[in-house]
Image (tube, rainbow, N blue to C red; front, side, top):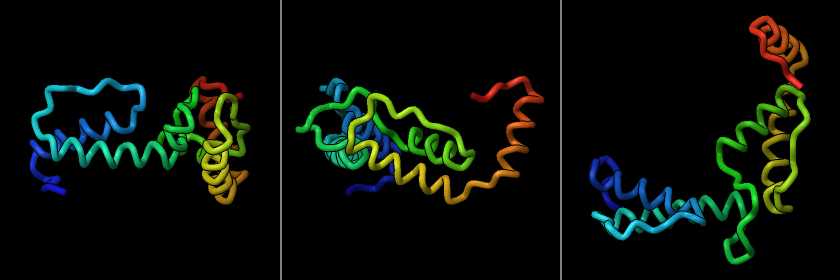
Length: 126
């Protein structure tokens, strides 16, 4: 792996990561730094398959990202129901772990305070 602090290397690495994480993405043939792109691609593909399952087993209709997992964790912390439609069994196993970690930190008083604050701002929660 090259120097990630080098801006040129980092740019190639990040392009490769984004391409690797998106199984439907198009490969850019005008790659400036091939080794950086390749390293980023491998890391991105590894992260994708860790969260969504092997590409060889098919591409799910909904993609799990770190942001999606953070939202499920927050839902668990607030005691909210979750929408688990269109996720694969593999993805639901990952999501369940994050949701449970949120439930472990569930505080009814904090949730009520947050809901009250949101209602005061005109934001309605389901």
